[in-house]
Length: 317
Image (tube, rainbow, N blue to C red):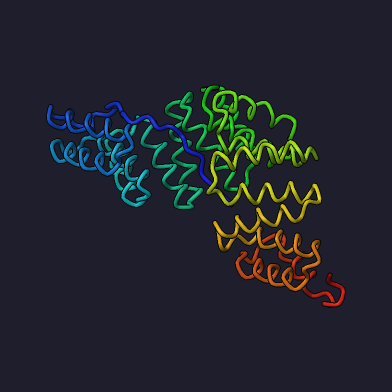
């Protein structure tokens, strides 16, 4: 399940091009109010103030950029893209709107456009932490784990106290099967924020792959305590409990994962396996079929599930 790690965005955009007109006093005041509201999490209020700033001074690139940020926080990516387009036109020599538009493209699933914008952001500012982080995430999502790893290392170099970047670096090392080296950034992230559930989750998965199943359950339990509504955490803990042969406990976690995410096909497969081990053959068949129903055609586990279902039913427990 792909997810997007949050990156702290710098709201203000300096006027780096003569294309942007100097804002009026009223526009600057409205933008300041918008920044304050955004900082408090009132993104709707921030949009209203940034709109006033734009109306008061046409061509105010910083207000377009910051309104785009607010729209992104509200999940209105298309509106954000329109604002970032304007900001890029008005302040083309500033890295921040390029970085922000690149991330908006990534949220839309357009890796190529995202990379192009993030490349430009880093060309303009080679020490821009958010751009390194985001390009690393884009490359990872696009399947370039080595490239993503290199960018996330640079993100950590530019800001070694950013929990999201430290966690992402640990996560991508887990994906690269570098379980021992994953521990360093994850431990650093958890030292900064002990209840950061994504770091706990990633470290739990590293422990799982290192066959330290008890430690995996411990970290994943802490992650669930910090974020009890995250289906993936229950699924991961179920994997660890299954590795410990505690299939009854795994089943409880898988039930919760599916309750939270009713089309979680990997959880259906794992629940089918747990039920099979608990001699619940008919129920296992149902779950395996559900996993096929909800999974994409290119799911790597599809052939395995299909082969299991094709077996003589009498061979099932």
